[in-house]
Amino acid sequence: MKITETEVRYVAALANLYLTDEEVKRFEADLNEVLTHMDKLNEIDTTGVEPMAQVLYAAGETATLREDVPAPALDNTRALANAARAAAGYFKVPKVIER
Amino acid sequence: MQVASLTIDAIRQGLERREFSAVEVATEALRFAEAENPKTNAYLRLAPERALAAAKRVDEKLARGEDAGALAGVPVAVKDVILTKDLITTCGSRLLEHYVPPYDATAVIRLERAGGVIVGKTNCDEFAMGSSNENSAFGPVRNPHAPDRVPGGSSGGSAAAVAQGTAVVALGSDTGGSIRQPASFCGVTGVTPTYGRVSRYGLTAFASSLDHIGPMARTVKDAATVLGVIAGRDPADATSAAAPVPDYTAAMDGKVAGLKLGLPREYLKDLTSETGDLITRGVDTLRRLGCEVREISLPATDYAVTTYYIIATAEASSNLARYDGVRYTTRSEHSDTLADMYRYTRGEGFGAECKRRIMLGTYVLSAGYYDAYYLKAQKVRALIARDFARAFETVDAIVAPVSPFPAFRIGEKINDPLAMYLSDIYTITGDLAGIPCMSVPCGKTAGGLPVGMQILAKHFDECTMFRLAGSFEAAGGAA
Image (cartoon, rainbow over all chains, first blue to last red; front, side, top):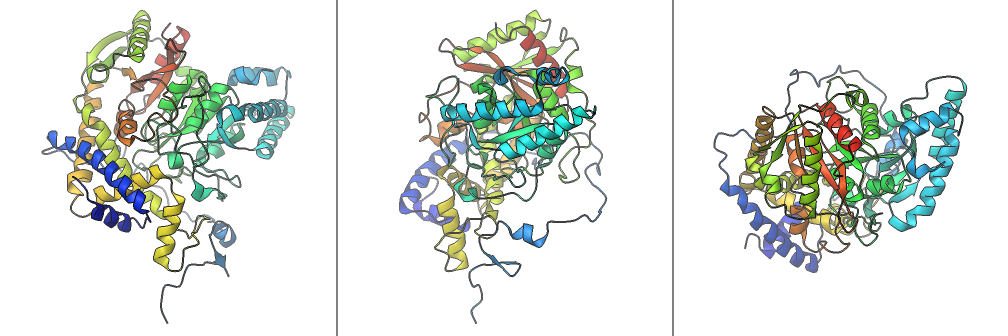
């Protein structure tokens, strides 16, 4: 067992992801299968190997930097056009702070 | 005009000789796409207004005697994870069913500037997560060669559209094989360029250290032309490379005799199927063309699937955090509190595979597991990249299968995520190393299913890859 039902629920909470009881069961089984397979990585020796966070190829150190030139950004109307709820030029969300 | 057999060159000639106008090509492509789409579900949405407006601009330029661009009048399909301004872009997800992008992706801007005519947005696995296109919230895509089979994924709609001929070329995206595998399943050419070669500005992020945009086409030359149009530095994407963009179609003219090709032992050892036989015949064709073929070893290959599914899901769990019920159109009705809004919007909005990957990615990044999974995977990724770098000290390009098998039946693997993940074995290594790779048609099985051969090259050496693929295609592929 790599992961228990309690851990599945804990991870779902970390991810802010509501799961039905049925989904919790399903993902417990799926994740156990996949994580067991992932144990294979322990076989390979990585002593002294630097982790690779991005693709590296020969290029100048500042090759991807650019001048910081201000340019027009999305206007307020455009930026809010896809909001689930908006009003008075702002995104609307459920009340966060109690009075 | 037979829109299904048009190439970029044929369209250019037809326009020059006044055999047809760009508006006529667009009208016919749209009519054909609408008639054919029920067979495959390749398109989620056609874009007649945008297509006809773009075609009209091309005709007006030509009438004025101006250069209308390298893709003048060419019908293009665009995968629905790539943003198109004012044209709904769903990413194959229920969550974004009504999302109208406020801007165009850089690749889209460049396509249209070159005269390309975007006819529609193509179906795909939800947020590009899948190898079969069955994870789309808007129904699976059917393979044009066998309607009971998948087109591959995640760019299954783009591959099917090009194979059906409803578009001449298409844009796909590739994170672990999502351009090459569907290209191989549908019998078209699909190119994953060097990481950073094409701007991802406007590509919906899945796994940012692995995501690519690339072309799909019915000929190698058409794919090379499209890459030439969309490649190049973009200030809006800091990961886009400054390296100059060569003339890829001109590079296809060179000789391939004398090129040294590597056959990775690890990719072929278990491949005893019809796919293996066709790849062997394809390699024979390359030998006949004068290439020198030698066996090579990429020892870390066995660990690639695991490495990929740790890194890709970790990055995905982070990238998909933005779908929180605030900015992207959809919010659950169960949103009495902020926490409930997040949980229920995501729980109701994401499909099963996205949830599975968010869970896996969150788990491997969580306290206590980060070193064992994520950090370890990043180290193994370095070993996989080193394997390729070493191989390219002795060979000019690498030849391999794309997929262990041809298109499988719809429903065959959908309930076995591990089996689905393992089927990506030959394509994910190229993404992990960030090298250019492509699928070129390599014959069909006895049952009539297309098989693709993969060509991989050094960083930014797309020219050698295209030259090899073009010569292979001209020589008849696996024939």
